[in-house]
Length: 277
Ligand code: VAH
Image 1 (cartoon, rainbow, N blue to C red):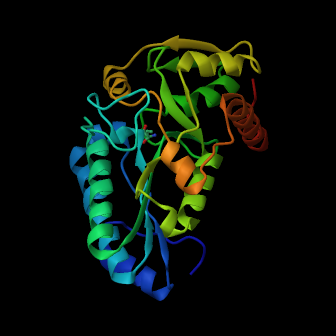
Image 2: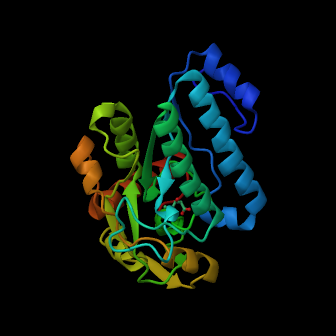
Image 3: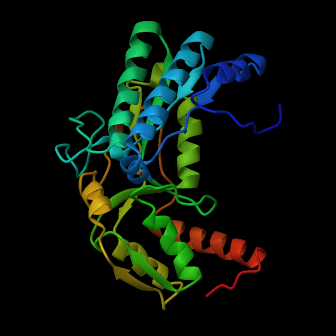
C-alpha cells in the first residue's frame, strides 16, 4: 500500500480490510463535517460525524487499535464557562458538529472504561495552516486573511472585529497529537484534554499582519450564522491538565504564527507564479 489510499469512512468493510491487511495499530480519525458546513448539511454531518465515528470505534475495538479522535472548541456551547473553558464542564453545543464531537468524547470514554479501548481525544482550537484550503469552519477567516493579505490586500471578515477565539498553528497541533499519542497510558488522568496556544480577535491578527504588510485593509460584515456560532464558543481554554499529565506546551504565539503563515504562503504563491502584494 502506498502512503495514501482512498477510503470511505462509511464503508466499514473496506476500512477493516485496510486495517487488517496493513497491520494498522494506531488510528487517527479526522473525517468530519466542520461547524458551518455541518449546519448546511445536518443529515450528511450526522452520517459522517456519528455513523463514521461508530465505524472507527468498532474497528478500534475489534483490532485493539490506539484510537485518536479530535474534539474542538466547538464541543462547548453558550451555557459552558467561556473564559477559560475547563476540561470538565457542561457542554451543550448548538451545532451538529459540536453535538457529534461531544458524542465522540462520551462514546470513546465509555468504551475505554467498559472495554479498555485506548481512546485518546484532544479538543483543538481553530487550527491555522498554510497548506490546506479552509473547510467550512467558523475559524476559516483566520486562514483566509493571510491569503487575502498577500493577494488582494483586502479581507472581508464575517466576524465582528472583537470576536476572540482560541487558535493554534498546525505545527503545534500535529506535535501535540503525536506527543499525546506517545504518552504512557499511566500518565493520563483524562481521555479528553483541552490544548491551548493563543486566543486572538480579527482586529488583533490584522494588526499583527500589518507589521509585515502595512496596507492590509479589513472590512467587517458579520454573518449571523457564523457570528452566533463563534459567540457560543470558549474565548480561551484551560489546558492545565494536559500540561501537568503529559507535558503539553505550545511553541507558536501570534507573532510566530503570523510570520510563518506569511512566509509559507508567499513561497507557495511565488512557486505557483502568482503575484505577491
Ligand atoms: C470550525 N475549524 O471552525 C473548525 C474547528 C475550532 C473550530 O473545529 O468548525
